[in-house]
Length: 336
Image (cartoon, rainbow, N blue to C red; front, side, top):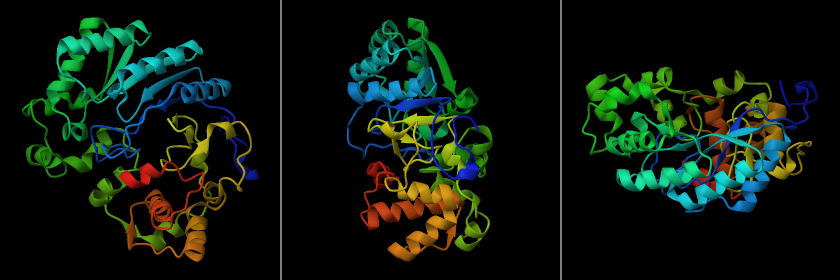
């Protein structure tokens, strides 16, 4: 596994990065029910600053990755700050693959073209435009159409994520938002259940509850008995993220964090105790430790080990007030 120490040593270190992105803000106009990072209007309206951008990008480059994507939250909520992020990233020799947007910022074609033209002049060539029924619960589809039209007008590439949903979303009134229930009424009661086979969704963050209600749960004892090994996915560097607080999110485990200064070296348990328990002993080790030391009581059922892990971490952060460096940012747990 690239960039990692041998798993047999059980020593956690991230020494190489393959592909990933930068989270400029967690604040978002939407509260999508599949969001891995629990973005929502409930977050503080904070955006990444120049210093943190530079340090994140220098770390990305120093660990062997020469291109990133930029996402949120919604990066376009502060276009001037987004311009700074683009300029800073490119000035440090790291290419920007695309910037993600949910199109909520769209007002009219003229103003959209102005925003996109300014970003294009600073080096942005591609916009990933979110197209999904989850987004359509919060954002009228005319805004998505408008951003696509503006991109075409200024010569910016469009990366539609994902175009397969366009036609069925477009059958509804594009001036209004539409619930998943409306999609189920129109396309079948199993519509939500089928979405993960059509659309890349990681079962973490808010998606845990959404899809536990669809696919069902197992007794926590069964989850533990089938997951005895350490969580080596914490070492996955194929789709990493850094955020506006200087956190590196290991694997796709939102709500876990390593400070960028600690990448490239051994990650020590004194500073990252819960991360190390997961790495060494997996969900069973974390469950036993938190149950005995912090009196954690599990619910009856969980979708997966990630579901149980989140419940344990949420309990530590919100119910017990634990402010460990590896359980960050707190806003993630508050907004799920």
